[in-house]
Image (cartoon, helix red, strand yellow):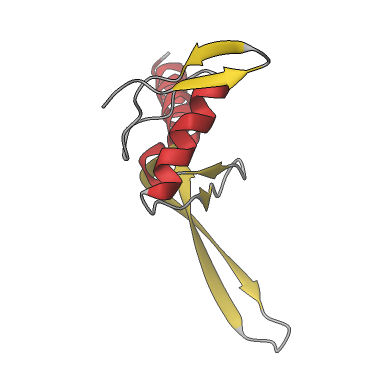
Length: 104
C-alpha cells in the first residue's frame, strides 16, 4: 500500500503504513493512524488490570490478574483482567532484581 500522508496544521507528516496486528508506534500522530487501522480491522481495546490503561490485544501479555468482589446482591464474583506488556516487563524486572538480592 501507498504511504498515507497526514495533514496537520499545514504540514504533511508521514504516518507510515500500519497493518492490523502491528505493534504500536512511539509517536503521537503515528499512534492515532495505527489505532484507526486496528479499530477498522475489528480489534478492540481492553483495560490492563495493573496500570488501568486501555490497550489493543497485541499490546497485552498472556498474563492475567484477578480479584474477588461482592455484587450488590451479595454474590461473590471473580474478575479477571489482562496485563499489558509494559506491566509484565516491569514485574519480570522486579523478580530478577529480587532474585539477585536474595543470592547476595
